[in-house]
Image: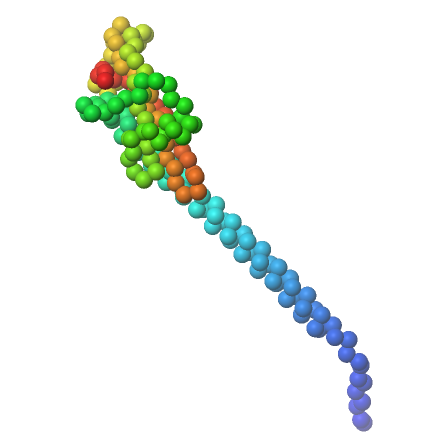
Length: 159
């Protein structure tokens, strides 16, 4: 018995299917790369924000230390400052680390009302006078990531 094979004309479907699969795999690869790049950018931004926050907080602590025990040559600002105005910061000479600055404003002497307050120099009882300082720190890094912190510092010592 002789087996005969039938021959069918080829349709070319395997070529079309392999091209479709290649197109799908390329699309998946490109989208994976885009997701990876955006994740990398987000991670870099978070690291930069963390660095700027830490740097600004460090400047704030240095400014509070200056307010509590100022050296003789330290110049306090006694007028109101617009902290979003760039000239206020370019005139500030109190730079700590790269991109970090602080401004110490003397807000005046106040008479303490109410309960006791603990200051850098001890406890202030009601009726005593305290000196009030506003310390503002700003840090800028990289692609204009900016953080600004502000605190009020009470002290027995005036400027």
